[in-house]
Image (cartoon, rainbow, N blue to C red; front, side, top):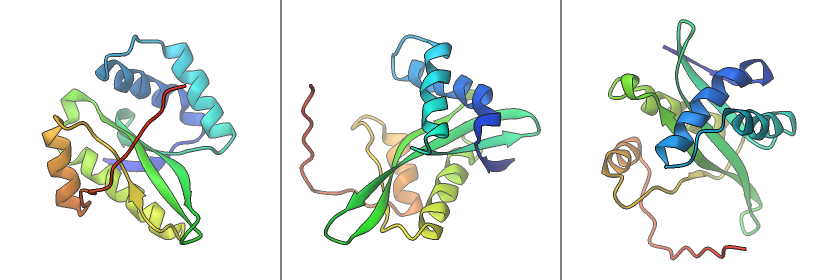
Length: 145
């Protein structure tokens, strides 16, 4: 297994994984919309995507979005998307993708990486804590427009 930063050249492969990720979260499959969405993120440099591959087979991906802290005047990264194909789970793919994302964040001079996961996603929580993420006690609010 190796991990590489995705470019526009890997759009088709990443879009397939992204579509599976969205289906996992009970969204309707839409490969064309997935390609269009990711194309904009890559072309406009609005996210960083790392792709896990074994030979020519895509195993999973992680996508980071930039955020900024006014208080520390530093960038942070939001680990927004992490997906590993069902048949590749339990083989360290997710852990390697996260560690690659953390290395990238450190190299970019970021303050840190934050993520959010569902209360019921215990497997993901265990992985995040194993890697060193600490559960926050802050209150998070969201306003739908």
